Image (spheres, rainbow, N blue to C red):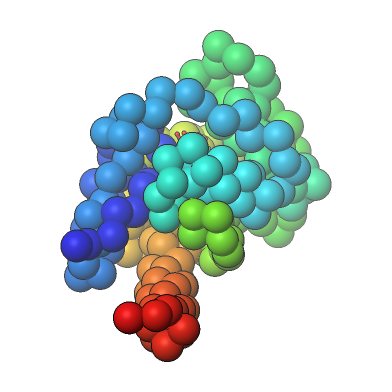
Amino acid sequence: MSRRLLIATHNPGKVAEYKSLLADLHLVVTWLDEVGITEDVEETEDTFEGNAILKARHYSALSGLWTWADDSGLEVDALDGRPGVLSARYGGKGLTDVDRYQKVLGEMAGIPERQRTARFRCVVAIAQPGGKVDTRDGTLEGLIAHAPRGNYGFGYDPIFYIPSFHATLAELERGVKNEMSHRAEAAARARELLGVMLSEAEGGRSERDKESARVSPS
Ligand code: ITT
């Protein structure tokens, strides 16, 4: 029987993206809503790694399944790494994506080009039920633009300028972004990690099976 892998998100877009990436691993990929988990764990850690691990452990314990969780956000060097882990809630509750990137633009007013460096980071954590948890990360380097441009994507995409593309992330079609994004890089690395963790778990299990066959009376 195939193993089930829980993607720890309520976001169906993320599930679809990860499902296609993991298609050849012979796993049944499921997600929080499908297994009836409605609660949201509070992301209390101050690093992406910490929050990804917290989510993976929490939902794995709750479901008893292998669990894949991610955390991501924007780090701006001139703002000492802000909004960072606060990216989704920067400036407080009730703000829109536009309000949040306008806040970043306001804080960057007067900062010259060479000091506008920033990156998106994503960390994926994988938890084995009652066992190991490990992480892999991905980054996408760019500059904070002086004004928003483009309508694709979400979040801070309109103010994230990539010099080699002469465009903001919001000016690039989804397929282009998905090939080089921080999430794509973290996911590709985590996919390899998952393969290794699964085969180690299988190896451990078959060793234990052999051992118990040797010691159990027939
Ligand atoms: P979950 O339900 O899966 O936790 P989320 O909305 O919290 O989804 P993430 O943890 O992936 O989403 O991202 C946190 C925030 O970081 C997100 O709300 C955006 O503001 C920002 N962000 C992350 N990746 C981004 C991207 O590719 N483009 C623009 N903004 C991004």
